[in-house]
Image (tube, rainbow, N blue to C red):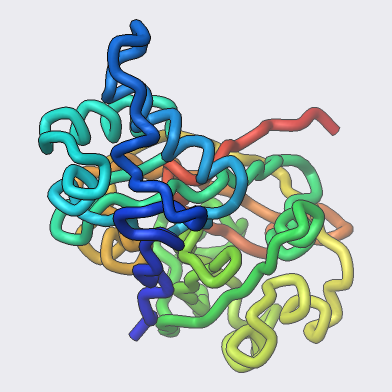
Length: 265
């Protein structure tokens, strides 16, 4: 089971600031700036400074209302403003969290998850969550350039960024091309490493098709998002140096935490 890495750390102060000033005293009434806006600005400043880290769960509306000495409606208006700016995200049944910085994910002839994430000074990771041997149906056979019923390996993988789920992918390989891909991926957590062990040290993206759809129940659990949240789906075919299809993938990205960029080769 994937462990929820979100932890509640709250504020470094409760009803007073680090300097001992009551939080309610930070609000300046009669200045022409709405109280809810001042609360939003206060929280936004703490997010920008890093005092409230990405992924941190905020106190409840009731707790914030008590800390600032206002009613819950005022706090709710402040949080709505921050949500509209993409700075916080409410999760039903879990609370409101400081939004994680979006991942910039380029789609090009050379798309490598680990390289892309590492280049953004973030930590990539991955694990195998399921696998099977399956005969190629008409669609898979066409995508991989093989005859129907050709034995394939199907891998279900979860990729993470800084320990947080970012995408779920279903990968298909021709069994005889990469006979050890399941164990190699399970050991390395990297498609590139697994393919290199099979002798495919270089490969390129031939096609990518992108669309959006509502998240499935299973993917919602893996990605830690609410049902009906949109996911970005990328259907892709990778080929070896000679142009032979090597891998067919259907990848589902958490739509609110990734920005896909299509690059021309």
